[in-house]
Amino acid sequence: MIDRAPRSTLAIAAPPGRLDIGGIAGLDLDSPPRGTCLASVVIPVRDEQTTLGACLQALAGQLDLAGRPLAPASYEVILLANNCRDGSAALARAFAARHPELALHVAEIELPPARSHVGWARRLLMDVACRRLERLGRPRGLIATTDADTRVAPTWLAATLREVAQGADAVGGRILADPLGVAALEPATRARYLGDVAYKLLAAELESLLDPDPGDPWPRHHQHTGASFALTVEAYRRVDGLPPLPESEDVALFQALRTLGAAFRHSPLVRVVTSARRRRGAVSSSGWRRPGSLSRPCPILLPSS
Image (cartoon, rainbow, N blue to C red; front, side):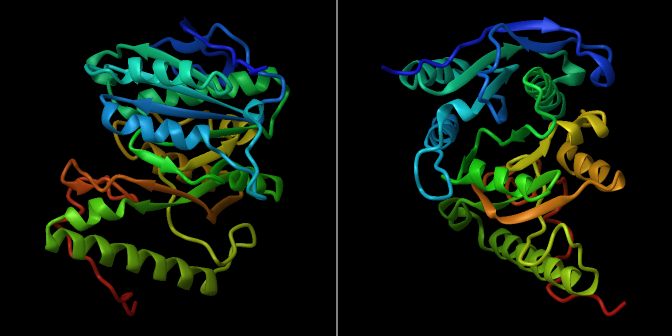
């Protein structure tokens, strides 16, 4: 017999307590989480029907660290199609129908123009994930987020849960650009991108030697962006949720966590592959989502002072 996961439709509810961000209602789902749910994965989606299928397939095929299928009842996926003009939501619902064992919840919302961006969408999703795990009494339950143009590794969830079990309050995954996408970049852009990645990895290694963090030992990396970011319910509550910024909301969340002394792990075991498409003048992978990043010099050697 197939274990059919509960499906949900979108409802609107004011987020309770410290997660009340004001001015906009929160999301809620009409079906409760499974009692065995350990992690809630959230995906903000805006016109992503060309990449969304591969993203969902990767999440449906999760394995444990021994290579066995991860129990579908141990996690759920919540997808928010915000201000979409394509068939993203329909594609996700069709995927859910073909994979009844996966708890995939698909919601749609039309955000007002001033809040029609990924920061608000991801915030709404992480809020509802937080509340659902709290209903199960799981302060160390995992709120994980990825992007619709990203394919998580088969052990993405299991490796993240392992880091949390070993004491991490939050985990940033290693984000690799799709090789075909990188190869398609113009040579100058590709060289600058590869130089930037090399520089940041070397800087992370040097930092681990000069100022080691017991909670984030070498080997580690430098990334903490929305393509692979996870934190516990209690950590999310401590920082009062994701800052709903138009961009760099993920980096702002990382900075808030570090300010409060949260144990943040840049785990090389947690890996995803994301698109190398251009967005806002930057390569949309490995943290290259910031305006103007391709126009600045990219040093390969660390400065002497």
